[in-house]
Length: 192
Image (tube, rainbow, N blue to C red; front, side, top):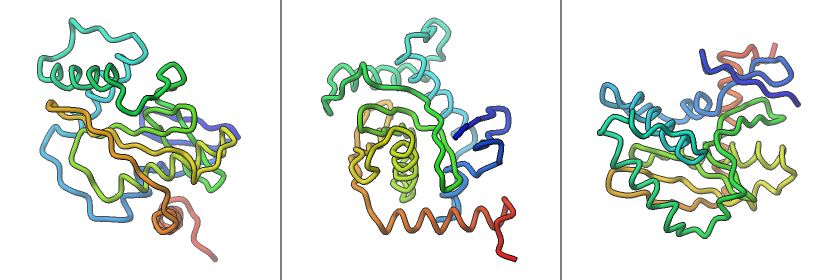
């Protein structure tokens, strides 16, 4: 399976065939929460800063002061390592795809662990996103998706709080239903 991601328009292909991104699939599960102007860009900026920090390419001198408290809390979390993660085993910003025909970018993958960074309030679909990543990662790395440790990291200027998630067959069924809807609406998947 060859998975490609194009950042310019946030599109994925698997073996040359367009597939829906996980974030678009889960949008079928709820009415989107309205975010303040600029919140999406701030979230992207914070993700990038954290990513660059973990891989050692962050240019701290050029970071807007607004983001420093986020960076400080991010670093504090990893220094304290409350989940006792083998940090050397972690991979960042991994593109994953599934034989079910969806793809996405997971923030952090380790030895049997999936972590997704969030800079806003918890939302009901965060578990759906993690399970989709866990399933795709399990396919790619030969793991049991139901045994993958799933964690949302909620990062704010006041802290970085991990929320452990457990596999749920009901959540998986919701995601698969939403995937079918997305394919029917936008990927020519309606039965004829």
